[in-house]
Image (tube, rainbow, N blue to C red; front, side, top):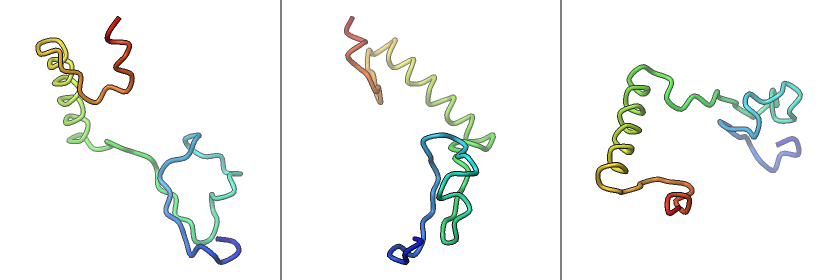
Length: 76
């Protein structure tokens, strides 16, 4: 961006949230930083809660483990 090879960037997620004000991309011309909110509305929070509860019920009742990051631990 500084050298003009990239015209701009829109960033949502950093390794550390929120990024430090000293991060080299924060405040840089041509960079848009948005807060990483995910599910920030009441409706989104309800939808996430319902989905999480449904996944737990599926796991208990049907033994279907959808979207599990580390399924090997379930085999123990």
